[in-house]
Amino acid sequence: MSYSYYEIYTNAQRAFAGLGFPYGADEDAAYIISWLELFNLNGINLLSKAYPKLDNAFNGSLTNNKLVDQIDLQNHSCLMVGPGLVDFMILNANKNQVIKIELINCSDPIFLIPLLYRSMEKNIFSKINNDESVLAIISKEKLFIDPKFQNNKCSKFSINFSKKEFEISNSKDFVDYSAIKKNLSLGLNPNEKDWGIVSNLAFRTYVPESEVSREKGAGGGDAND
Image (tube, rainbow, N blue to C red; front, side, top):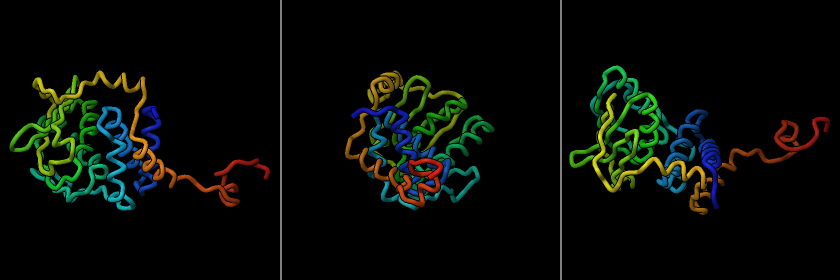
């Protein structure tokens, strides 16, 4: 079954609220998931697999809020710590033009990609690499993600932030942004089993109809009842 981007985002946002994410954090996390789904990067599937570790375990704080060479994420999900981390890096990149930070013990790096994509709105570009190779580059025209990074197989890497765009070589693994319009027009098609898991999490936020809930306006009925 096909769903609109808005339906994907709304269901994911409700799911994160059901998992105990506070207001604002649930919206950031829903953006991450719906963006990945839009780019055919299996956002709903990733959420359906990750939710047991997220359930009522929200912790979006970082151990260090200063610009240092290395940050230990302690395997906290980037759905929780990613938005604050990237915002902090953007702030410092605007001041210093170019910065580099190493992340260790990152359990789900793919969730950083939508946040780095969004940072281009503030003219901050990023490149991810380790000692061996380039793992991801986010540019205006297209996106490169190494399969190892996409599959959360890299727990230690560096992110380079710059006011200047990084070049992408002719790699067969890049994502062309032109696919966005097609996906938006045709709709998104997450796996139905995964969609059902996410929908069940979203149902947690619905108020059961009862005499009490009706009195509070949750159910139907006339205001004069």
